[in-house]
Length: 87
Image (cartoon, rainbow, N blue to C red; front, top):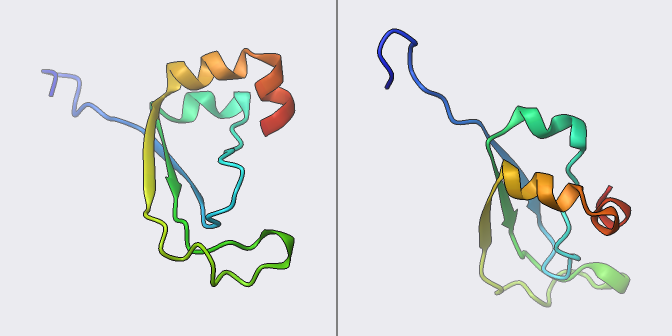
């Protein structure tokens, strides 16, 4: 804690995907970058649902968590290919 300035704060945004067979993408708008310091991405992996699947396959896949600092997200957003695929 810094003196006289009050408590420090860390802003965290969480994005989650429930499908085990998701594309591992997570949309982030450039205008929302000032809203967080770290982005936590959680892949819940509760089952496969693409192509008419009912979710019974892929149910035992482990939870995946990833923490990304805002500076890394800014770097990805500066790449045109990232903008096209994930917005």
